[in-house]
Image (tube, rainbow, N blue to C red):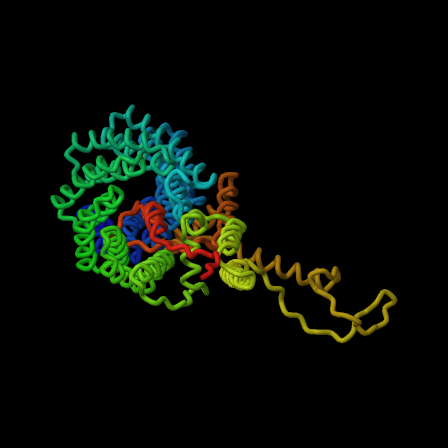
Length: 570
């Protein structure tokens, strides 16, 4: 008990690492008091969560939930479920997190715990918001342009945030109201409801100022700037970003100051005030180098190249584009790499430099990359299906290429597509166990006859196939079996008593439902997603990369030269 109390005090003072050591020492000594052990598990889980060791946090929160259910502690079960939900959310296991948070909500309502109910509603909103944002980011889409599954997740987040807002307003919890307003603003922003986003962020700003919460005020200014960018109100966005920068300086947060400079540079680019854009991007570049943010440094070079191109300084722009390409390869930013190669091709054309048809890492020439990123082709930015890409390529080749060249390019494109897609298909394949070849088989009459042609085991309904099927299914069932949890810190007598209680308990429907959901997520763990865009501390989440690429592509298109295919006679 003394060790546990010292660990709790250290965690409250912010020294979670030392606090964890005291809790671990308490567990090694052991106890027979299950309630005390449950409290230690909860504190350890929270401490590990704060230290960002989420797997360890998950382990102890599960121990806490097991003890709470065994003891019949409904309040403890609700809190442990909420802690589990938050940890699973951070680990990206959203469906399991939703179940745990829903359990927290149901038990809190059953106990008429209004504070617990408000927290559960808030946590559920967070999980759905994180799920929608994760799915939207993996599709490389802009706010308001997400698939149905993403919109549904975000709409559910809005429902829970609104319910949380009503609850905390009734409790008179003004800071919690501010958090609800901010989250509602962020969710409506992702849904493309930018006017509503502005409304909620303004409410958030008022409460932040009322409580002199500078960090919340800074976030509100930044979010307001983002929303006004997508409303096309760039001048207003500039003012909010400048206020964001001022508060970042007051808070001595260089990473946030760098993000503000980056956003200001991009917004001035949208305003076509390129000299001002260059100044802010140079500041962002200096911060990125100081903070060793290679991703941010690459974004700065890309932005500076665009700005210098607009100013007519093509040679300087080429230098920045080459640096952008180098860093994009280093950090594995495929989108940045292709964009840089396209820019280099365009700039060398303008400068009259001979262009070598260099092959990219995806098996495409730089000329083909240029066509894939052209404004007419939406495949690179908006996820168009391959039929649209093929149509665009065929139309352009009819104008500028012979039939043989068109056929060769199509073959290269499909070769690239097959290579990129084949690995995703192979990841989901299931191999049959290798069986020994037999030289003969038994026919209907019982006599052995030589095989005239190979028989595919996948379509042979015989005893061998059934045995193989039973074995495969049996192995899968064995993998899903679970043992009684080993709870560290229990003395031998208490452990034996606890196991007797667990064996006598019959799982309820909610537990079985949770088990089915947990097993279902194992299938999703084997799926593959689009490669994520690398992010750095000096680049904000909403960096408008795709938005500005599309806007800049219009300028790049005006610099293209079309050769006249008509024959000229002397």
